[in-house]
Image 1 (cartoon, rainbow over the protein chains, first blue to last red):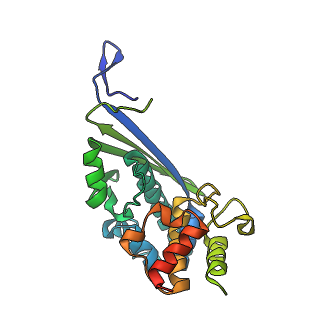
Image 2: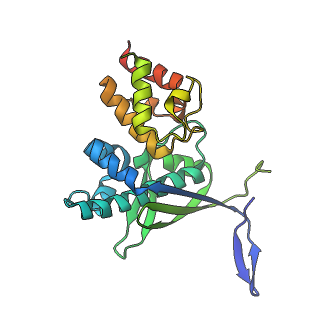
Image 3: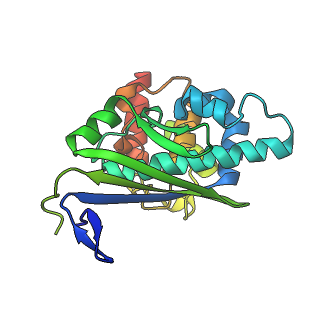
Length: 156
Length: 81
């Protein structure tokens, strides 16, 4: 079980609650292939209109810009999967679009949940999610941390 | 081409499996065989193209894509044939 910590006297003291961490990696080549093969059907089944716009999907055109777009899409897919790992759905497959990686004006990203993902977070007492995205030439990754209001039971 | 042959072809092209599709039996866990969540999206879209339908929201469960048998059942449910 993870605990929520507060800084005190140079150390960290548990203040109750729990943290959940999720991470994922996505191959950028796979995303390039998906966009090439399925086009808008792929984009619109996985990403929100904001994500499609903020990744530059509607303005790309050259091979170089297409790869830059794919890097951004791959990082967002990794973040969505990382959120799934934090939410821990057992059987249901959440709509990918119910997890939005929202790019702020300053360039950093926040997670916005809707629909079933929002309901699942509420049921789990997750009151805050934070995300970090990264990519290099061949792979993109994301780490998501979720803060639960209450301690979790039965995790051994 | 039978439904199973089409499913295996889709998996071979889009499943990114760690093992040859020929080595899978119909109950093999595809996620255990290396299929990632991202690959499962491509498998879903390719199945829709191959069988000319669109998965309903209630079919979009991880279990729908967990094995060849599960995919076949999902395709049959959606196409009614």
